[in-house]
Image (cartoon, rainbow, N blue to C red; front, top):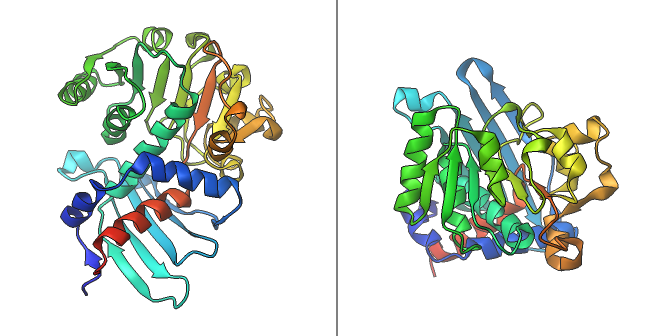
Length: 317
């Protein structure tokens, strides 16, 4: 089939896409209720430390709809295999015929996730960021650093991980990106000295506590994309001046916000979507002294936007 595209062609096309911009546009469409997003499909394989997420949806009155399957099997590196894989399918809204099969091996998911973190930082990080703190040492930790280069001039990064050697390797990779990067063994010290913190781990217990966070900090929590996962203490969300998310409907059942809601630390009416902040910046950060949090569990509109952009470049003219 001519419309089956392998990873090299997909990554070549991705170079032509302003991903931070189109993901931001997608969040706006979501907040304007222009997106059909059915509940996420999910399978967990605890014996293999693996998970599968199926996300799908469409922009109303558009030409396409997208189905994405993404896998994360976190023991794979020990077997010499990458931890992520997946594919995206693009169909016509008018005929139901398949328009493109994107054999992206999880790469488009990684890129769209990182771009969402950059969108959050663009609209919520304080004006003056002297140090970025990255909590995590995997693929997404590196991707977050890569995309943050598009929205902040800060090039100082401190990296923390449970495994010090992995943190040192991640810091070296970030140095290769152009950062002044170092591995940090003290997570509390990292938090106290970073104005922009990104968490990108599969943790199921809080790593960051409220007493670690200084006024003027923005935190983007990327790792908690299931009911079980948790990277932030619920007390952080309680003290935050702004709690934002990609989708309020989804945040109720998964991610950091779901834990804080169940603990009654925050109320649903005090949560704001990133799309709303983009539409009305007055709903976002008001001063450099505020603590802001973005809880991003990943929504189908991100897959729709990136799949449509890649397909438009690759489809025969």
